[in-house]
Amino acid sequence: MIQNVKLGVVILAAGSSSRLGYAKQLVEFRGKSLLQHAIDVSDMLNFDTKVLVLGARKEKIESEIDLKEFEIVMNEKWEEGMSTSIRKGVLKSLELENNLNHLLILLSDQPFVSRERIEELIKVQIESKSPATFSEYAGNVGVPAIFSSEVFHYLKELKGDQGAKKLIHNQKFDFETVKFEKGNFDLDTAEDVELLKQLEEE
Image 1 (cartoon, rainbow, N blue to C red):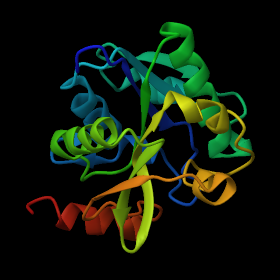
Image 2: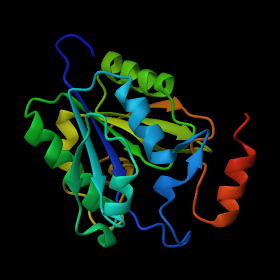
Image 3: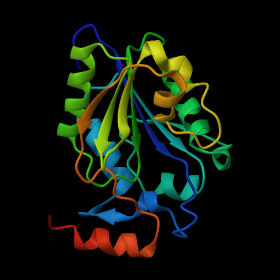
Image 4: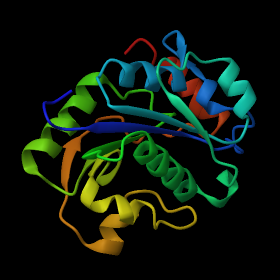
């Protein structure tokens, strides 16, 4: 993707969508599932490693998506929280390419993530030489986010339902941000799905 820089991507898709009652990874938006959208957007970019972390409903999800060049890793401990998926994704990525310089983490349920948004995150990360670059929305920061190799060990030390943004509070390291409008759209209930359908034409 960028000369002399090795980049990986991890899509986190292991959750059970317990409040929704079925796999939100497979909710359709603009003609494809949310997970397929995340895979397709990532596939537009020349990542050195591509890892998809599955857990709950693995067989159904796997049967309904086109993996492209993604490697699946199963997180048997998905019920223990997002940190377990992050650790699995980081470890698998480094197994595939031990010399990764940066790792992008995506969720499988952000319908408005785009190639342009990811490219901007990567550009800011590379140019700033920052430990991390987070998306910023609704006065908060979160994923998609990209991390340099110097903080990979922190990602592997996350516990329970801690997401990657917990690093900000735990480690107090400097980071950059990129604006991501609609990045905070949550898809947890049937009402959220209905609202998403209404947004399809925007």
